[in-house]
Length: 228
Image (tube, rainbow, N blue to C red; front, top):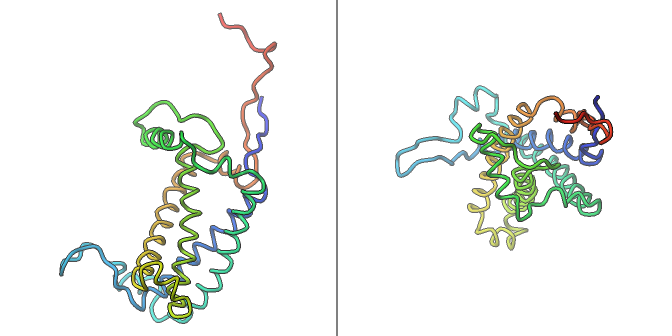
C-alpha cells in the first residue's frame, strides 16, 4: 500500500523554479558581456590549455556583438535573482526550514558517504533525511555563492560609485575573476544537480514539482507479518 509523503513546501518550490530559469538566463546574458573582453584561460606563459571561450563558441550560439543587449538583460535579471534569493533566505529563517538546510557536525561525514554511494563505491546509502550531508553543504554553498555574485557584480558594474566595495574585493580585476569563477561554479552545480535528479528518479522530481512523494506505507505493528 502506498501513501503520500509531504516533501517540499510551496514556497520552497516557487523559489526553486523561479531561480532556475533566472540564473540560467543570467549566465547566458553574461556570456554576451564576457565576449567583449574574454581574457580568461587555463595555462601558463604563452601556453594555453583551455580558453574561455573560443571564437567558434560565440559564432555557434550567436553571442557576438551583443554587449549592450547582454548588459541590459543581465542587470534586469540581477534584481529578480537578488530579490528571489533574499526572500528565500528570509523564508527559511522564519519558517524553520534552515534546520533542514544548514550543515551540521555530521554533514561532512555524510557528504563523503553520499559521494561514495553515488559513485558505486559504498553499498550502504547515507542516513535517510530530508537532505543528506552533501545536499546541505551544496545548497548552503549556493546561497553564499549567490551573495558573492551580487556583491562582485555590483563591484564591477559600478567600480567608481561603489569603489569601497570594489577595493574590499581586491580591486576590479579580482572582483571580475571571482564573479567569473562563481559562474563556473553554478554551471558545475547545474550539471551535478541534474545528474542527481535523473539518478533519483521521477518520485524525487515530483517532490519538487507537486510537493509530495509516493512511498510505501508502513503497516501498524499489529498488522505486520511475524518473522519465521
